[in-house]
Length: 154
Ligand code: ATP
Ligand code: MG
Image (cartoon, rainbow, N blue to C red):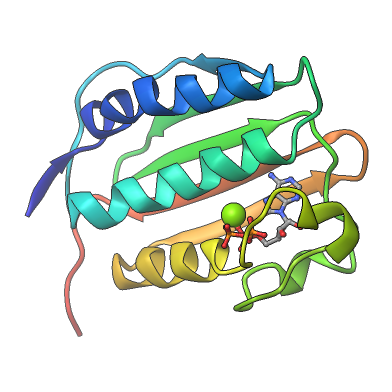
């Protein structure tokens, strides 16, 4: 399936905007252009919805979430940043595990299950892509999703 990544991201914004507004978080997007990759559009939507929902949920009031798109020769990079609570360095490797949540007490009121990032990682791997994270406690978090434009089976 061919997927126009920027269009896919644009289509998510109205829903995400609503969530952000409810939480008093500002959403910025600098996504423009048109890049076609091979992929599964509904699963990729799920990836970015999950990352954006996390960025909003783990923000503070008046926080800021930004969505960015970058195109390289052979891949696209989508990043989702927030200036929220951050993730302690020693917990970062575990957040992609199923049911893992940092600080259960803190996460409880956001009502999640801890499955979001495990699903995200699974989908990205099925696209032969990669996900990485940079985070500083009390300063914020950025997730980077890299997806090759074309992939060859081996
Ligand atoms: P759900 O299944 O509803 O997504 P969840 O959000 O708790 O539940 P994940 O999305 O897998 O589960 O995230 C795992 C944990 O990683 C979260 O509970 C949270 O502690 C931490 N986390 C994820 N994204 C962020 C973020 N942007 N800022 C701070 N912590 C985060
Ligand atoms: Mg989540």
